[in-house]
Every structure is written in structure tokens, then in C-alpha cells.
Length: 484
Image 1: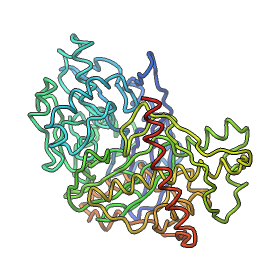
Image 2: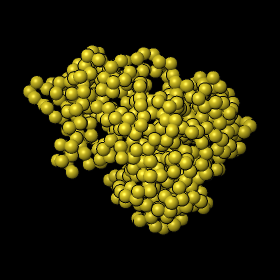
Image 3: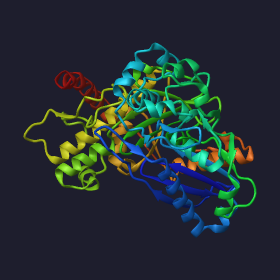
Image 4: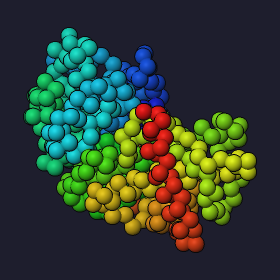
């Protein structure tokens, strides 16, 4: 058996799979986020341990024999979090999370240093780890002076599981300290934030062994014998391992709270000015690019709250057959936008409203606005050298056939639907645990799910969609001139 542990923002998911990658069971432990000030987002690392214990206890209660047979563990986690520990492994302050924006001034200052984009291949976003440490140095100098190690969230869990300070390439690529092409810490970038390699964990590939489970934990969980812990992956790379998006050109679109267009790359293809993330993948000699929009299903949920109709009812009113755009344009920038604009100040808008603009028309515009935002991501990835010929759809929004038809037509590529199943980060982490424990071929293990169907672009509407996308592109600079 193999165990995947996914440390998310709202909880820890534990999943057991067998040697044939059949899911045996899963369980969860809950987490809360602390927001003591505007723009702050924190968690206590001890809560991650507690939630992991809850999740594993849930598995043990239902599947004690299977848990006892675990030979490998894989880790996945929320990225970018700054977990600061002293020489005695004591946590110095709550972890500053990925969605914390307090370090926007420090991020801009680091991004102005050309070495960061040149070596990391990315803009220094406020959510990344390095600007958080610059903020701590400025505002909490006593804590900064006592830092022995900086760990990402899942790697703090690894420290608890194994006693080792180890990270891997995909998660570390989101710190702004990794030389992403060389897959190694950059002494120069660390020095720019007054840190050293000695304060960083050792680096391995996500498929490699990265410690063994402590005997006392193994005994507590009912496991005998050595249990290998894999390097693991950041959450999106782990999801890609679960989805089989590991070979050059493979891609998925995730319609969750935020939206992600993720493509695996056989070579390193940075283009930071596009606001595309260029990170290491969890597999050796593999990278990935990722465009991120901040409001995908969040935009539809906002519309649902305003209209008093459920998201399912709203999309149901549209029917199954894709309609031509009406001339009403929606910008889904309800909390700013990341790719391609890197604009925290921009806000959303409806443009082109008239007396005939019914609720159905507005719903259609919301879905199209998200589809066009994902098209922006596709264009950004293309400008960075990545070609995408088809995508697999995942996430809650993928339950809407109409929305997927809109996305297929906006992108001009087929959208595949996976067969029912859980192919997320916990499953990908379990796959990495299997690979590390057995030495199996990563490509042979990380296969894509069976496709249950494909939604093709509606060719008769491609011209109308291109015209609507041109209008959509023209609205951003106009709204920016009013909001900046």
C-alpha cells in the first residue's frame, strides 16, 4: 500500500492506494486560516500535524490492515508558505501562507533586481516565499535573527514524519530562491534576502526517497518495517501527477475557485513578463508552465449570490447548446488578476449592458469572461513557447457542459472529460510514494485517466467568439485607466 498526504489550506487529505493504483480509501483532517490583519493569512504548523493525525486516524479506523501494509508515503502541499524554525526545530511564528499579500512592497523591490527573473524564470509575486522573509527581517528582526531553517508547509510535515530537512524541485521553484533551470538553490538570490544555503533544506526530485518514517509514528499507525517518504510535490504539480499531465505538451484546465491552465514541458521555458509560472515539475528533467486566474467558479458564485439563484440553476437556464456571444462582456477580475496582467488593483466589470440584458445574458457573459481569461492564459503560454493541442477539464466548474463548450470554443482546442474518480493532489502524492518506494518508471505510473468524453470547439461560432475575445481584450486597458 502507498499513502498520499495532501496538506491544503482548508485541510489535510490522506489517501491509500494499492500497488495497482486502486484507491482503497481516504480521510480528512480540518484546518482553519487566521487573518489577524488585512491582507494577512496564517496557520500554525502544529495544526498541520494535528490535521494529519486526524486524517491518518480516519484511515486507520476504516482500513487498519491496509494502512499497516504501507511501504511508501508521498507528500503534496500548498505552496509558498514561510515556515520558520530555530536550531531546536521550534516554530518561531505562524506560517505566512500563499495568499498573504503583506509583502507586496518587498516583492516589488526584489522583482526590480534583474537576477530574480533571470534565475527563477518568474516574477517575484507577493505570495512567494522570498518577499515574506524580507518582510520578517524588516518587521520582526528578532525572529529573523533566530531562523535556522525555512521550510515549505509540506516539508515541515516531512520534518515531523522523518526528522529530515528536505524539499523537492516543484515546491521550491515557488520560493524565488531556486535557479529553476539548474534545479538548485541560488546563493546569490538567498544572499539578496540575507539568507544562506545552510538555512534551506536539501533538495531531491519529487520521485526520489526523502527520508523514512520515524519508528514511533510507524508503531502508532500500526506499520512495521521501513516506510520510504518521497520528495513529493507542490499541490499543482502533484495534481498533474494524479492527472498524468507529465509528458511534454500534456495539459489540464482546472475550474475551481481560481482557474489554472497547466502544461507539462520537456524543457525549461521561462517568460516571466507574461506572468506565466515556469516551475520544475515533480519528475526529473521535466518542468511545467502554469497560468493562473484568480476567479473562476468564484465569479459564478459571486453572480449566484447577487441573483439569489444557485450556480447550477444559472447554468441550467442556458441549456446545453452553446450560444453566440451577445455583446455583453464580463471581466472576472473580482480580486485582481495574476496571468497575464499581474495586477492586484484591477477589478471586474460588465460592459455592453442594455434593457434586454436578462439574467441569462449576464450568466452567459460570466461564463464567457472566465473562458476568455483562460484564453489569455493560453496565449501567454504560447508566447512562452508551449503549444497545447487539447486539455483535460477538472474542478467543480467542469460539471457544466455549457461552460466547457465555451472554453473549448474560446481556446480552439478539444476539452477531454476524465472518467469518474479522484485524480487530485493526494492521488498524485500517493503515486510519488509508490515510485520512490519501488523504483518504478514515473511515466509508466503517472498515466492519464480514462477519457469519458470530449467536447469539441463549436466551429460555427469560432468567428463570433474571436470577435468577442477581441472586445474582451480591449476592456482591460480601459478599466485599468479608471481603477489605477
